[in-house]
Image 1 (cartoon, rainbow, N blue to C red):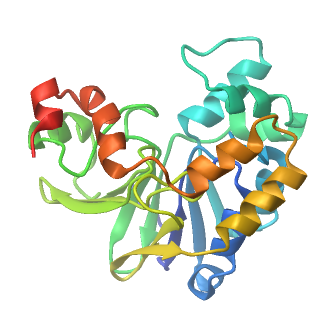
Image 2 (image 1 turned 180 degrees about the vertical axis):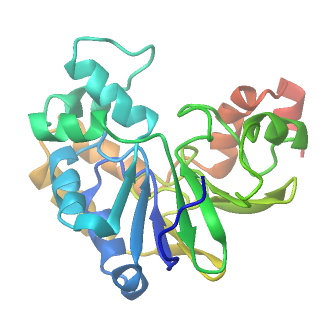
Length: 262
């Protein structure tokens, strides 16, 4: 059902992964401060400062709209004694740093939200795809793939915002605009905290901050054993977009030849 709330501008932040300095830098942006909504499209806390990130976001009050991602689900599963199929070391570590109220918050997050945005109408926000929190779609996913992903969406939804792959893009697929804002805390391809500003158009943004200072702060404040190495790798975006596409390609239904083609 379309939302009846008045439309406004929305800042979209995804895949924060517990990196507090990057989140703080984006929240300080004037356009983010002025946005009617700050929509967080999942994978919020699985990283070096999980509690601090959740506390900052909940402090935004009703302006913050949080959507659950696969890593958020995994945090809850780990604390509940269930082992997800795949979990990296920092997610397992972060699960033990959350309070009961954090776990209750993450457990209750919706997988999708439909919200009105000025100039765009009703926009569907999700983590990976509208139907799954781990499914992979990419900027060059085949149109047949988007047909499957969009199955069941109402005709009034002409814009879909997702995250999950940590690489920003905007594209059209079957007349719908698809937006991935990229990642705040674990960017692939180039450094910086990537986000999007919606209304009345679509703008992909990147906030640059002092990465070396952020690494030093994470090293001092996070108790994760391998934090300096982790922060250096992810904050400097040492994984290229080509590296990420090679890994994600098979999950998008591609053959080895498809992935390696120029």
